[in-house]
Image 1 (cartoon, rainbow over the protein chains, first blue to last red):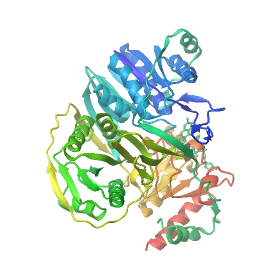
Image 2 (cartoon, each protein chain N blue to C red):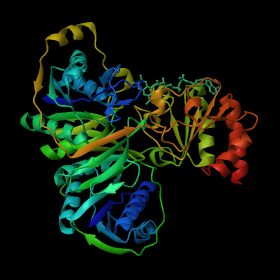
Image 3 (spheres, each protein chain N blue to C red):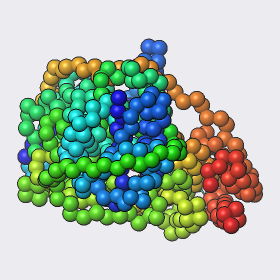
Length: 247
Length: 317
Ligand SMILES: Cc1cc2nc3c(=O)[nH]c(=O)nc-3n(C[C@H](O)[C@H](O)[C@H](O)COP(=O)(O)OP(=O)(O)OC[C@H]3O[C@@H](n4cnc5c(N)ncnc54)[C@H](O)[C@@H]3O)c2cc1C
């Protein structure tokens, strides 16, 4: 069985968000990049499957050379090899089209992505790839089991969950719940040593110009918090009801 | 030119997000003299369909039953319709299902697709839009170079607006030979759905233990609000995962968000900072949440929340 885990490398969740080049680019100075949290659940799930079913796990990411340290971390967690598709990854369509070319040429039984990336929050790469390579796709997965030549997949939806059965191959987009938080794999010393000699191949990419980013800006700072005395809860309720009209 | 808006329903019922998408599309159509078509799938009663007209739908196309988890059939149906009607612009709300078939549709049509859009376009030719990025910590202005475009709205950012119009129904029959077998559907226990709620009552580790959530639920009940929690609270199992909000949980954007005994870590705020009004209740006057909140009470939740419940009951009666 062959599994591709597509990961996005995103700024650490505590990063300060600033822009440079006249507000046209995210300022990467001093930013530490990590595996996108939603993708981490997917990667751990793939390693669990590998441990039980002897799968080969390949991590794939579209990005510049700076993301290689993050790919090495994924190798240290247990992936067998890594592919970096060399591209600025400037928008979701560009990322999706480049992933599609690789995933169409290399057959996988299961492709795991994350529900959305923590930086641009698009959540559309998986759907575009699914269409381009003609696969079934389930988003926001909180459960995955293998049953012969099919997958039993549980997805989150508004007000509940839905469990479905789909024949292999399939693309899923994972999130917390696919594995439990406490079970997330973290690299150990042996993994880190092994990762150094695992293959990390770089592929060429294409550029696509569907969308042009014009500029970024930040929301205006919140006004000061209005403090209300704990003995005066009635005033808060009055404000919420009459001034803010939100009750 | 024609615009298509997808009005999603859940077991035959529309939600606020569907009406928001319809009113957004109607305003866009009126401003630019476009024709608006509303697509609605499955069996929806005429009474429910009539609600759409209040928010601006007139031409409504309904379809035979189709499973929304089947993104292949859903996107094919919409793309077939596009060919018949020469549609250039598509509007969706951001729901779990639309996020499966809208991107598929974009690949089929070779169109651009914009997510987390918060306003009407500032220009249509070329299409220019404002969207949220970096978990609402920034906005991006982006421009399309495509002839066809898909807009996915950020929830509760445009809001719902009323328009009067007459409904003209027509039916579309599509084939759906799904390869997906639905095993079961589980409804979550909470009375109010977190992603759609106007008011969210959220609590953190400051509540000390799961036995104290009666207080949180009572507050939520009298406000007809959904309940939510911080990540550690769901990690230790005090509350279900489906209530976890934040960067690694759900993103919510209600009109009113109560943060009770939540410190206000950056990862928590990332999922809730689109809320219109945020109220923090915390014993620690230095808690980070007070830097993000609009209103704050420094005090013990176990004293403040019962008072809050009492005062709210007073005004509701
Ligand atoms: C990669 C990553 C992702 C993360 N994602 C998320 C996420 O999605 N969502 C999320 O919530 N967190 C997330 N976190 C965790 C986050 O950093 C915080 O640890 C977490 O939000 C803290 O939860 P809390 O506020 O409930 O608990 P605490 O930080 O322990 O705060 C408890 C608060 O309660 C107050 N308090 C105590 N007793 C009372 C009382 N009687 N009355 C009133 N107030 C009281 C305290 O003053 C304190 O401010 C993430 C962390 C990382 C590293």
